[in-house]
Image (tube, rainbow, N blue to C red; front, side, top):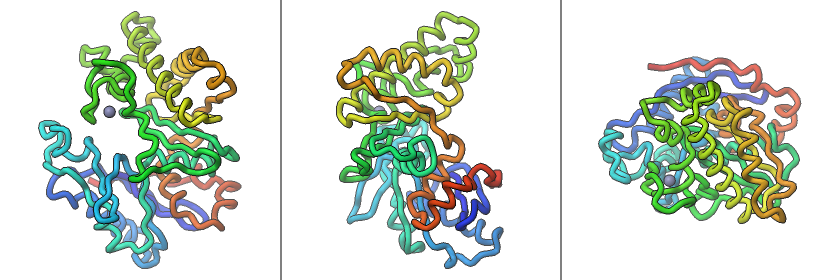
Length: 319
Ligand SMILES: [Zn+2]
């Protein structure tokens, strides 16, 4: 979990703390408040001077009496029988209900949705009305604008591209699905398919050393990733795919040509003229995304001009 404080000119302070997954299901919103209190003390400001709180969170979300509830299987041990991996029995995290009692101007969205907002305002999507941002990382997520409008859906989960089905009888995803996009081409899937206890990074190293198994695993992952993009493009008719996330950003030279090759082999009437761009914000994306949710209109032009995220402070790490 990272929390950043910004004013009209710049990011002032950034704090990182590992997400806490024990105790009752209000632990995470309480942790958010704890870090904000720490930041206020450090930056010598009063809590009521905080004009707005924007949150980019992993999804998916649900709603309970109008409040957004986080139902992420990577945080909630009570979902999809993952208690052996996550040591809690949560089935939902009341993020909005808890924090809205403390912060009156609160906005929460999926982190891939906040990412596409930030890329459109400050990054690789400037001036575009039809764009999809996809993160290719431990998991796979996306956010999209269509006709200049951000799409969200009834619970704010659109488009949850990582969980679209691609093959029959595929491997199981953390969400419970078998054969969806994330189960086939996430960083975790690449490591799993290679086996031998290798990390994703090690598989790419092996690829660069002409290891045939690494070639096979990565080529298959890139092919499936592209097939996911073909599907989402068939639905949204997008103009630009912006791809970010550690798996992609650390291996653009390997992955981008493979993805493009497979993508452009699909139905030309739909795939022609679709562009691919790497994320232009990468390590600033999360902070800028959450900030984009609540940034006052009058800040935007200055931030576009001065790019203060490029001289943002390094994170303070809390135990
Ligand atoms: Zn899934």
